[in-house]
Amino acid sequence: MRAQGILAAEIEFDVAFNDVDMVGVVWHGHYLRYLENARWALMNRLDYGLDRMLASGHAWPIVDLQAKYLKPARFGERLRARASLIEWEHRLALNYLITDVANGMRILRARTVQVAVDGRTGELQFDCPADFVDCVKSALVKART
Amino acid sequence: MRAQGILAAEIEFDVAFNDVDMVGVVWHGHYLRYLENARWALMNRLDYGLDRMLASGHAWPIVDLQAKYLKPARFGERLRARASLIEWEHRLALNYLITDVANGMRILRARTVQVAVDGRTGELQFDCPADFVDCVKSALVKART
Amino acid sequence: MRAQGILAAEIEFDVAFNDVDMVGVVWHGHYLRYLENARWALMNRLDYGLDRMLASGHAWPIVDLQAKYLKPARFGERLRARASLIEWEHRLALNYLITDVANGMRILRARTVQVAVDGRTGELQFDCPADFVDCVKSALVKART
Amino acid sequence: MRAQGILAAEIEFDVAFNDVDMVGVVWHGHYLRYLENARWALMNRLDYGLDRMLASGHAWPIVDLQAKYLKPARFGERLRARASLIEWEHRLALNYLITDVANGMRILRARTVQVAVDGRTGELQFDCPADFVDCVKSALVKART
Image (cartoon, rainbow over all chains, first blue to last red; front, side, top):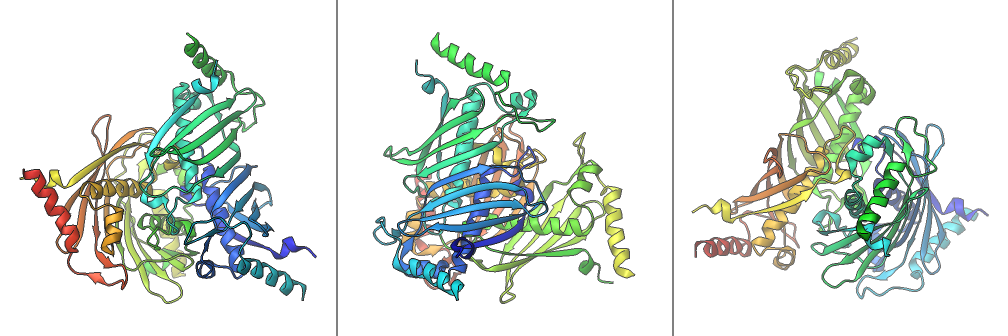
């Protein structure tokens, strides 16, 4: 079973004019916006969108980010950003890959780590909240059947 | 000789209203703008500002980024971002530390790696261009005397 | 003949997490990014995309902006932004309307004015460059036939 | 009595690398971030910062924006943004002027209109809330004595 395929989501979008810097390529910081959008696409697919997250009383700050910029992207290019969940026991780890839709070339690889925080007390949770883990398990079960 | 102290620069700024997300903390992607500003403060201090970079015919894309988010920052807080040059032979590596000015608490630690690219051909340079290395050496000599 | 219908383009998109401020609504400045994307959709439809603009040697800075914010938009809502060309003789004027796709409610109305500037001399052009006007005329003729 | 002088605040800042577009000038949408910062500087000066606004239970969405772009700004230039309160009875109207610190040249003029909204009910307030008007009156009295 390829859990990675199930626990992943993709978005496609065009590079905006104002994402490009004076050198003519996407400014490196803007990729984090693309990753954010891909991450929410995955969360929605897992049925853990904003409403459910708010209802669960947890926030999920990013605590660690790694990115490798492989090839610059330019205005008007169509990009695909894929987010894959790779850890969900004690913390949330996602891998990302951004590619150029026209030629499949790799633009950026990244990983983020998030931890669950109790929204009222601000306390760090050492295990991922049960309601989130349930969403992951449901997605895995649904894919198997 | 503490080269690190010489090859560093700091900026201070207030967290803007529009840098804060719906959870009430700085959205993680905005920190890259703070790092960018600190990096240029360092480049200016090394006498390698935009004009000199353009004159040298090189671009310096970021190829690797690592960030650890230690503590969330909030609207109106005054932050200090420090950029330190730690490698300049084959590639440019910088360390960053963002702290809360009011209490010295650490907000973010990060590292970026940049490579020099020939602006005309787009070719990767396996050594940092001589004019940049000269700027670093001048700064080190100046500090010694 | 409804020139307005011909000289218009629409985009659709989802409001991103990081476009929402601490009050929970899209920060007003981000709408200009949505307008920028709608404007380029129109320019591409008129066959006057970035390549042609660069080839023509003109830049088109925005010199005037007016916006009325009618209703706040929130994270995850799907919006439609429509850009319509309403003046193209001496200067470029566009009208914009952003609506909520789910219910058709109006989110924002705006107008921008751009002037052509000679890219080499920086001189303001008092008439829109002929190549741009030709693009508009072609679009109008094509629509008639 | 020059109420305008009393009910105004200024900020200074350097144009960031990532605020500049591929044409080499500040992308027009980023100026709204500069205006936002100048507006909060004024609000803080009037003793109506975020804490007081939240305590008052009102939000102040921008409902109208007008901007005239007079001269492009570039990377590294130091700008001054001045926000002046010009209406505070039924709605909040501010004028803005952004100038180049080095030569005093005018970069942008703008006006924003905000209305007060009850934070719980979302209802529009047809008069500015008393606590805000009190802040304005206190500032005017203080300036007279």
